[in-house]
Image (tube, rainbow, N blue to C red; front, side, top):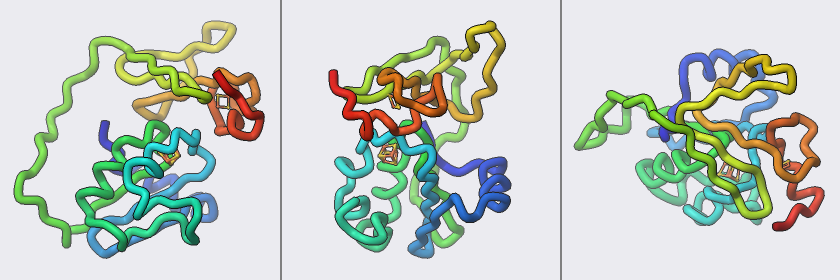
Length: 163
Ligand code: SF4
Ligand code: FES
C-alpha cells in the first residue's frame, strides 16, 4: 500500500488547513491528519527516531532519511500519515507504477484495536446503502466506543479496550 498523498487529498488539505500538520525536510513533506489516527503505533514502532509521542513536535523528519520515512508511512493503516516527494528527492530505481487491483478483501484484527479491511471490498450501512470510502483501507470499530461508527476513530485507547 502506498501512502503517497493524492491530488484529491491535497485539495482537501487546502480547505482544512487547520486540521493538517505538515513536516518537511526539503525532499519529502509528511502530512499528519490526527482525526484519522487509529493508534496502531506502526509509525512509533517502525521508526521511533522520527515518530515519538515523547517529543514535540512528535514527528522529526530530520532524524532519518527520506526513503526510510516513506517506507514507514506506507505502513500507516488509516492514511493518517501521508507523504509527498519533492523533485529534490531522486531514487535510483523508480518503482513500478502499475497497480493490480486486489481480487479479495483482507481483514486484519489489530490487538486492542479495530479490524482493518484492505483489498477489494465495499461497506454498506444497516440499510444496505453503500458507504463511500475514500481510502484503500478502512478500520472498523470493535470496541463500540467510536463516535464515527462503523469506523474506528481511535477511541479504543480512551475506553481501554483489551482483547
Ligand atoms: S494510525 Fe498511522 S499515524 Fe496513527 S499510530 Fe498508526 S501508523 Fe501512526
Ligand atoms: S476499535 Fe477503535 S474506536 Fe473502537
